[in-house]
Length: 218
Image (cartoon, rainbow, N blue to C red; front, side, top):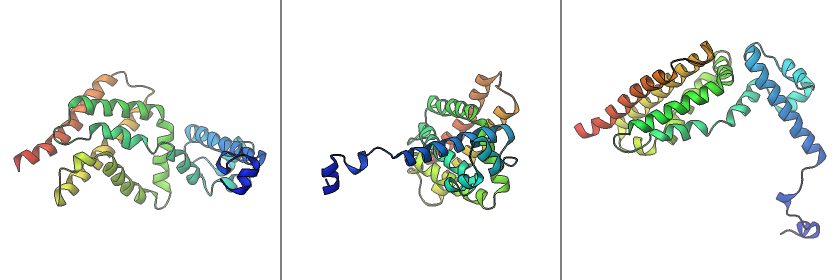
């Protein structure tokens, strides 16, 4: 413990935030809440920094003290969900054939997540279309997510076979999750959700088991 901490009796990391710090956190929280609400209501493209600041009852200048752009705010929100994809996809990870039940668990969780966050995910897809360089960063990031989520599955392959297995999984994730997004933004809730879950599970499971089966055939 430092001398200063010893005198105060409080460790540096345990000190209470100052009133100024609390106010700053409150302002940031209001900006984030306003951004999420406006992205859902108007979409990413139509929402401006001025809109967000006004909705948060603050100024444009104050917005820029917290975020350099509306894309930075969206990225801040997205970072709160960063662990979701690897953890969910990891349900399918394994050496050898993956049980169909685990694939179905992943698909069901994917549908749940995309239904719950459809408007926010829609804002990300809009941002990809208009923000220079964002799309180019998305695919490499997805490759990293797949590497994190499937260490045992990808560990079965080497060299070009590993590259192919990873690329297949990236494409599978993109196709699966983009379908889920369009499903939940085209209508409030699909009446035939169980049927769609079963169909999606079959498609994903066939790809995963076919790639794993190639090891036995080699």
